[in-house]
Image (cartoon, rainbow, N blue to C red; front, side, top):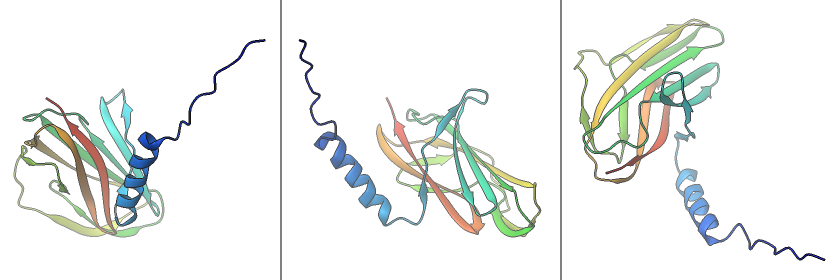
Length: 160
C-alpha cells in the first residue's frame, strides 16, 4: 500500500497576504485593473474593458522595460451600440500613476474632441514615453476617454 503525502496548505500567507493587500488597495479605486494578455501578432500586451457599448483596448509595447526604454501605449475605443456622445483625448493619453517617465513623442496642440461616435466606429490615440523610474514595480494609469470618464490601470515592472 503506497502512501501519498498531502500537500501543505496552498493558501498560505505567501498567497493570502498579497491577495488581501491587492483587494484592499483596489477597493478604494474608481479605475479598473485588468490583467494584460500578450498578442503574438502585434508583439504587444493588450488590456480590454467594456464601458457599456464602448469597448476599450489598450496595447503596451512592454510590461518590463528598463530605465531609458521607450514604452508605446495605444488606446482604441470602439462603439458596438447606438450613436453615443463621447469626449476623448486626440493627441496622446492622460498617463498617471507612480511610474516616472518623460514624453518621447511629438507634441500636439490639441487635447480632446467631443462628439458622437456611431456604432462600429473607432477612436484611437497613442503616447510614447521614456521610462525614467529605477527598477521596481509601478502602477500606470491610462485615460483615453474623458466622457464617459474611464481610467485603466496596469502594473509595470522596471528591470535592470
